[in-house]
Length: 429
Image 1 (cartoon, rainbow, N blue to C red):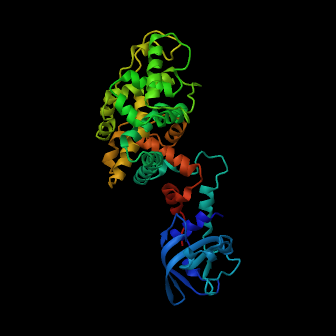
Image 2: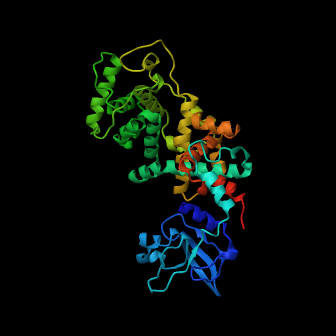
Image 3: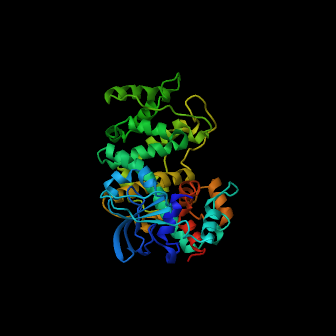
């Protein structure tokens, strides 16, 4: 038995009310179970119950055993002074308030229908044979419920991505252009070099980027130089020119590389090599004077694609690194790459910016990501095998990734709208 299941039983009142009484024999009638509290403090706020002939209003605390009250030191915590009822699976010890009066307790293990318990065990007691607990029922979940829950999942995922943005924002005294620079750098590094690129961006004051943005060569020099990519032996004139520029700019702006993480190449496709991505980032900043304002006002994915159409130094048409050439080809940002930037930077940044201005996002604000193709990975493929049309765009695929990671993998069916709906179909008194 898990305590979160007891929360579910109380929240939805899946209990035999005719037999509900306190341990000392007083009948209990629930007028309102209260508001479920997911933070610290009592489990349910503002509950209303009739105990005997006396109506009580206050908080309800739920435990597997009544002795858990003392195990959790609630007797010395003022947050629990207003608890009016202790709901437990097994009553094993009497609990007293600070004034030495007995706290009413209801034992519920005999108030739950066997069918209700069986349904819970069937759904939540996965023995490892199922990919997700509800996979046998997932295709039958109501479209309206599923759509609303996935919208909620997407908001949760964006809020999680926003944590890093908010941390950076606070550290940069509210300079949104500087925040964007760091987030774009991280995204240009993708999974392999994201943290390294973020450390590179953090080592360059954005005031320096502002001053150099009309000179693409100088931007390339400080990006590549801070990444440690201009320290090798190479006789290529372009390389020597970059290194000369970097040596000058490093001294002028007193740059140092302390804290910069080394870039990686392992299992990278050549188009994602650090040199190429850093040069493309430099091209983006030399092309747009006020990139943040442009992005914030960018409402559609196709506008963003046009914004990201970049031209880089001709040297890179025949190179992925400084040391080896290949047959000529134009290196552009692929649609898949730009979609990742929309998913991981543009939309979360818009979300955070709106929140900072006291605005709540409406679904029209997510039209950009709804126009982006869904990611293709094993999790999305598996969901499609259960429900073929489940992921028609990136909003849905992001929501499904959030659902799988934060609910399915954690066996948190009792906190999931789908799991709760499946359980509510079952027997109740």
